[in-house]
Length: 186
Ligand SMILES: Nc1nc2c(c(=O)[nH]1)N(C=O)[C@@H](CNc1ccc(C(=O)N[C@@H](CCC(=O)O)C(=O)O)cc1)CN2
Ligand SMILES: Nc1ncnc2c1ncn2[C@@H]1O[C@H](COP(=O)(O)OP(=O)(O)OP(=O)(O)O)[C@@H](O)[C@H]1O
Image (cartoon, rainbow, N blue to C red):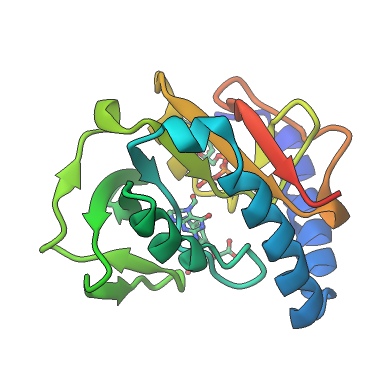
């Protein structure tokens, strides 16, 4: 079991960060998204990647659905995560016309007709996070989906973090890994 105090610290930070993100106006978020996406798309690691696992942004997350057609036009294979029972994830390849299905958490996910792509074949993973610190440690939604999925992953991981919620230090446990590259709009 994780140490209770760190679990509580994470829960408290989630509340603070969610409040700060929901205080941003849609216009502020859109402006922040524009800078984050421009910087993300300019990364040499993105240029070099053939297969990219995005996430389908929801709520105050960057609206990463906007990246799907852009990356497809760049000739990349674009993958989206799908939640599995037991806090697992799988990556499935999407096309412009793929039918996506709304998960009860709110985000859209690929359906059965989208082919599963093994983790070893993925060059770059865009990892969702409520916030990150300067070392690349992240605070997720609390399900442990990405902690499990990324354990032992050998490709490149990237995080997007709005400057409003960039942290000096995110509380971490043994299972928490950090992203290789952090993009901010600061
Ligand atoms: N866009 C996006 N997709 C993603 C993630 C993510 O963080 N963002 N995930 C990253 O892991 C996985 C889904 N994990 C999630 C876990 C919890 C909640 C969430 O909102 N939980 C609510 C309670 C909802 C409920 O129990 O019904 C909460 O904690 O308040 C959302 C996503 C896979 N897909
Ligand atoms: N590799 C792992 N194996 C088993 N349990 C894990 C693993 N990683 C995380 N967990 C468990 O998952 C739960 C949630 O962890 P944590 O609060 O770090 O999630 P998170 O990183 O915020 O969520 P997410 O990855 O879904 O965005 C914790 O109870 C943790 O012990």
